[in-house]
Image 1 (cartoon, one colour):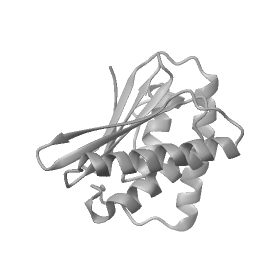
Image 2 (cartoon, rainbow, N blue to C red):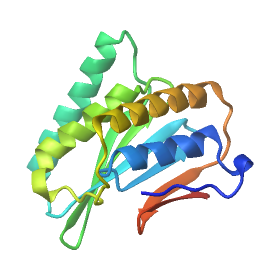
Image 3 (cartoon, rainbow, N blue to C red):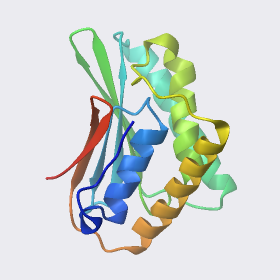
Image 4 (tube, helix red, strand yellow):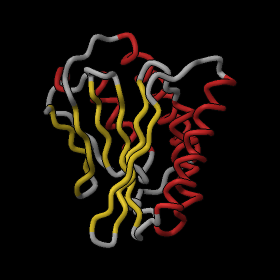
Length: 172
């Protein structure tokens, strides 16, 4: 996946964070940054319809895992929510987390839980082959950018998604 900013000033830390998350995790379909609520919204897509019972089960498992992770990190989450909607034969799942208590390891946890739950039904962008070292470097970049965004006073609502092996970021 190629990411090429036009000019050095075009990529803020928050835009860089969204780009890095999409590059690292092909399971994330889109990601939004809402500066007013200081919330990241991760969107995942399943190629099958979830029943209300299945949604309740995955919602409980993911939210409990987030709570346990933050308990162990001695943090209290401000925003931790999951929503879903059905569209044709797809289920669109949105996970919302506040940026102030979110950790890069928690993003990996959420992605892994959804990967296990949906299995082959999780719509995943085809990803170039990465070496283990590349993945570790990407995770470090996400960690650094996440900390930078926590300290910044960002006021732009950003929306990012993939298109033809590129990551596009828009300012709403």
